[in-house]
Image (tube, rainbow, N blue to C red; front, top):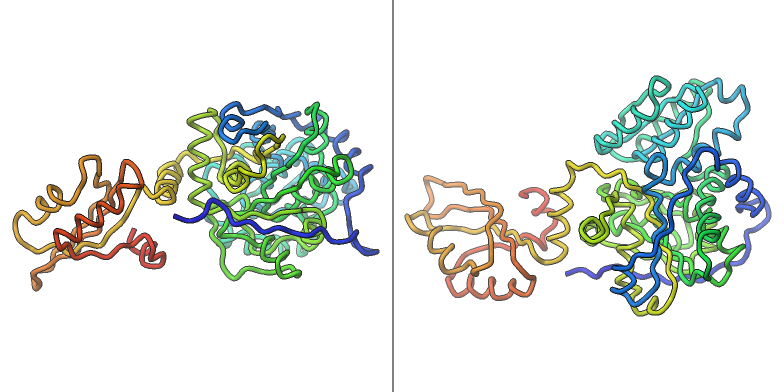
Amino acid sequence: MPEAAKNSSLTATSLPTAGTYYPQLEDIIAAEKRLRSVVNRTPLIRSQNLSEQYGANIYLKREDQQVVRSYKIRGAYNKILSLSTQQQRQGIVCASAGNHAQGVAYACALLGLKGTVFMPVPTPAQKVQQVRKYGKDAVDIRLVGDTFDEAYHQAKVFCEAQQASFVHPFDDPKVIEGQASVGVEILDQLDQPVDLMIMPVGGGGLASGLSAYFKAQSPTTQLIGVEPEGAASMSSSIATGNNQTLAEIDTFIDGAAVQRVGEKTFEICRQNLQQMLTVPEGKVCSTMLQLYNQEAIVVEPAGALSIAALDSLKEEIRGRTVVCLISGGNNDIHRTEEIKERAMLYEGLKHYFMVNFPQRAGALQEFLANVLGPEDDITHFEYSKKSNSSKGPALIGIELNKKEDFQSLLQRMEEQRVRFEYLNDKPDLFRFLV
């Protein structure tokens, strides 16, 4: 089983050099005041379950209860308000995997502006529908490319051709300052010092703004960023000292999956974050199910990142006050089976095998009777009979009651001389067959 998270400790660098952008306290405070009439002041709640589990005081900042169910409205609205009347009239353009698009759409509808939103083709249908709902007749949606970066490129080309104003999802001063307003609320809501502030990192806009505000107002707070293991662009960039473009990413955690973080956000995060953690996608799925079952909280994959990282910090946070930011709750119910599947694979409860059965009567019955344990369950079975062969391959998925049962399952397969190939540890073959 993979580790819950990979930990990369960072050393804060010196203050930014002259000419580089860094969020100023007065701009962040001004943005928070500007946004009060538009955004929800989301709850900061103490999680009894998580606090008991980790022996800490763990608070959840519920941006999933924001007006568009994510923090993205903060930066989008703040940026659009900063534009001149002429710029607003020429149109608003953005690229987004979903949440930023919803924020831009809501702002455009509220202000009566024409907007064009570019979204990757694999964006969950629920997020596309939400953009349509918030944007009403003010927003045109264009699905292009397989990743955010491809949609972003097309949006920039369109924006230049139309001379419209581009609202970047993360690498823009006004967007960063708007996202930082969530930090103003956290420190205002909590009547005790925050020992650790844990935040998700995608393109870095939230982490940049939030960390800058905490650096100024709560300098003793340890600032920790969390990325998906399959899209660790900020971790890779900070580790190498240069902003890196990842060749490939896993887009499952779509709200935090970017191939390249922002130039401004990279510099700010490199200065401010003391740690970067990466969390496997399967661990995130397990956390999503845990939050639903124990806290009655529905989050999207990116929204669970900060809580998914707690296991790797359990010794560090004991007895301390921790704030985890839940960044969004725009989860598509149609993804539930995939989320459950990824969670069970990560937890060691679901295993796939390619089994060669003898082509004779009773072979499968013998497998069921002599190999499966009393609490094991076959949840996937595909059999391919070959008329010119005495054996036929079958793809079998087996669900266990507890992960410790796996070794005894393998032992019984060996004892019964079952010819098989284990697929879980062969990712390329696994993705092709399952």
